[in-house]
Image (cartoon, rainbow, N blue to C red):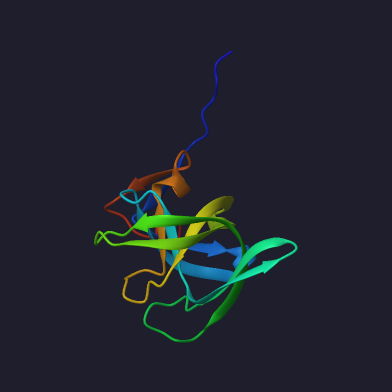
Length: 146
């Protein structure tokens, strides 16, 4: 029996995504196949331990360079990892698992929490988040709509 492969979604090097469980309806993401791990902007990060496990509370500004709106997020911690950034520095980051919506599809992705104030994008979608689902055209942007 011949196996039918699912068609991979074509995306650009930047796309709009959403994170429904974090109440983030629309946020611009840089698609970075050079990065394995994905990251989302987070500040005022606070770990919470209770009978239900480890959680992390954080805030984010979804629009680069703007202080409003400010979104409060709460997610279960699935790991803590040492991440090496593009400038070679390492830091320990909390990792959460949450659904990401890209176009008309939604699937779970791991996100590390990092203050991305000085970065050009609030979300970096690494190759682990899109592996097997998407093909990136580095010459295109917002292929799934603005």
